[in-house]
Each structure stands twice: as C-alpha cells, then as structure tokens.
Length: 329
Image (tube, rainbow, N blue to C red):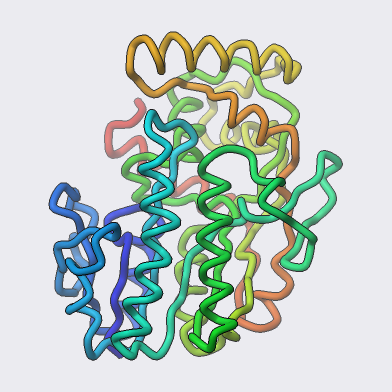
C-alpha cells in the first residue's frame, strides 16, 4: 500500500510513520523546507518537500497513493499569530482532503484530537456522542482542531472515505519539540513544577495510538470518530507516578485556579508580549484545566481493536528519552 503521510517529523507522526513502515507500507512523507529530518531516521520512505498551506506543492505526490494519513498540526497553546494556526490546521486540512479526492485517493485517516470533545468539571467520561459545539472550544488550538474536524466530517458525508481519530494525551519517546504535554514532564524532571491545580487528563501510550492508525486504514468506518485513550488521571496522580519513577518529590501544594490565572496572565504579558518568548503558563491552559479531560475509548476498542493500556511504561519511556537527549539531568 502506498501512503502519503503528513507530520512524520513530529511526535505522533513519527510513531505513525514507523508503524506504517513496519507493516510494509510504501511511504511518501510530506516535509517542509525548514523541517528537522532527524526524527525520520530509520523510517523508509520518500520525502516530499511541500507546504500544507500550498496544495500545489504536494498534490503531484498524491497520485497513485492508496491512502493519506494526515497527522500534521500546529499544536501550541500560545501563539503570537493565531492566523497561522488557522491556516495550517483548518485550511490545510480542507485543502488536503480536496487534493486527495481529486487524486483519486481511496482512503484518508485524519488525526484530530480529543480536544474537540466536550468535557466536564466533575470528571464524568466523555465519548464521541457527547454533544459539543464550537462554543465549547477554549483557545485557538481547540477551535482550529474542531473546525478542521468539521471539514473531515463534511467530506465523509459527501462520500469521501475519511476516518477520524481523536487521540487523548499521547506520551512516549521522541517528543522532540516537546509538545505541551511533554513540557509537563520536562518541567517536572527539571524540578520546575512546585505546585499543581485540580485538573485531569487521559494519558495514552503513543505507540498504541500509532497502531490504531494502521488499524483504521482497514477497520475504520468512514465518517466515524474514534477516541484513542488510556488512563484517566488527575494531574496530581500523574505527578505522583513521575515521582515514583524518578525519585523526584511530587509537589504537595495545590493552588486555586484564580491564582493560576493571575500567574498565567503575567507570564503571557511579560514573557510572551514583552520578551517575545513562549510563556511557561497561559490563560488558555488554565481555562482548559477547569475541566477534567476524561474520556472513554470503548468505540475504538470495539470497532478498531484498539487497546487501553496501562500508562506507566510509556511514562517511563518518555522520561528515559528526555533524560538521554539532554532535556533534563
């Protein structure tokens, strides 16, 4: 099978490309001129230099492909120019779907995010059928992923074979950037996590997320959304698990959201606006943290053969990788 893959130089995309290559797929990997190709080391495939925001740069490479796996996304919780995120995540997804349709590509797997779901302050589980709207989306990242997902759903309704995957919070090795989740690990390892707020995440092994992409190519139902999750954990539980792995003390001070919001406000103002650097905390993160992002992966288990795995091994693998690559002592 010949597959066009976007985002392979990123965290999840790297693992997806490896999983596809291991199954014998012939890969065409979309990369930008500025991409760091180090994360492609060991992955067999042809690189295609192009830009998601300029379909003419990659459209010829879609010819004769059997499938597209679209993992690439601008994943940041603070961005000086939000328009760039909308162009990449929303317009880029819309244009890629159109280009794949025009090239006669049979199947598209689109990597969305659990961020497009509606969540609750109580920690009640969400699933693919929980009612949600654009008004539920906090911040530009969630809004762009929700809007991009709507393009994928519309394409499927028009007859294009598009399967939508919604990973929760992937963790594991090769988080080069790192992602906002990876920064939680890096800050903890560098003892820059003195306190926590009462929030929760669903952590999932990135390797199992990658395996689900392979399964979706043959098992997924077009137009269906599939949450790919692991363990539902409070932030305190996550920090305690990291403490058990590393021996670094877990923070014991819980701060109110009002205090966290005040800190984030000044971080955005001073570090972000005045110094032009990425702030360590953002108001978007604080607003998102008011709800526990707990979710059920029952549909993916039943229809794709996805596995909900204990997250401890993936956490250890992430910590070992960050340490061995100089992100932390």
